[in-house]
Image (cartoon, rainbow, N blue to C red):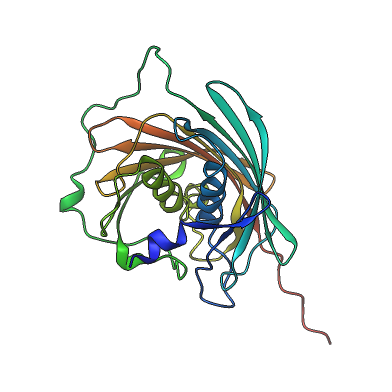
Length: 273
């Protein structure tokens, strides 16, 4: 059995509510990518199979407990002939963790663009690095992640190559869920890297507060994909990262934008006396 695929499955608990499995370990903060992917999975369970996700916007309100399951309440905001919309609230012990809106659409004819030329790396020739820091909630034995950091200051770019190491059923939604799950890992980090810091060094309070994704084309999670991320702006203790999810054939499959907290830590108080 695949732990990754189990984490992305949600169980129907009735009354438009779905339950996502806990990732563990107990006592750790829930991984944001799991909350996003399980929210999308719950929303998709209520939509006709002919409509695929086109956009998702999620706000992180509170941290969750990795050792406990999460409940997802889905509201059917809109159902049309070719489009649908859902709102998803994620709760844990009646505490609201995240709230999301998701749009779905049937495929429609229209002009298309969004393809890169030659990509900058051969992922097979890169060392397997894993993510940019500890990720105890992720089944890293089922994922191949290879990082390349390029440039410095405002020119800093992070290229994250990834694919699954386990067989994935031929279900386009499942491949999208895996992409959503993987691409959240340390995605806000480039906003700190621009200034010579990192989430791993813990010099700043950091974490994602707001996540948006637009899905353009199908993706295969069991083939190499490139997430190319930059940070165009930061101010008031918040940073923004923009990223393109690119298939190995150069097709841009999704666009991502995240806002995250990157505030300086308050100095320790002076000892009394």
